[in-house]
Length: 146
Image (cartoon, rainbow, N blue to C red; front, side):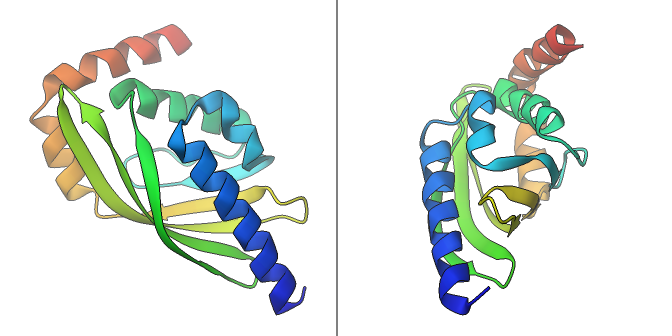
């Protein structure tokens, strides 16, 4: 793939990524992720399929129902894209946000085959630990899905 083609593929993915994160829902992940996608991030189990990813994202949205993300910058790589973003929402009645960099491998069909999110999870863990009220919707959601 030429450098120009890789840049164009990355730009298209970032456009869809930003669109997804403006009003995210697990049901919309198929606009970004391949059926056999591998997803890895701190504080979550690694998933290996779109269906597993949808369940994992549903759990995150149980904890932070209004979670959105803002893309700050991105750069094409030979096989995908790096995206610098801030995720934010409310957990347990108070704001929460964190900065992350996602490394995404993009297949020929334009869908992600792998996403590895990098962020410092300690501030997020400490914030969540101080807000047990945020845990109950997440626990209830897990029980509904099991």
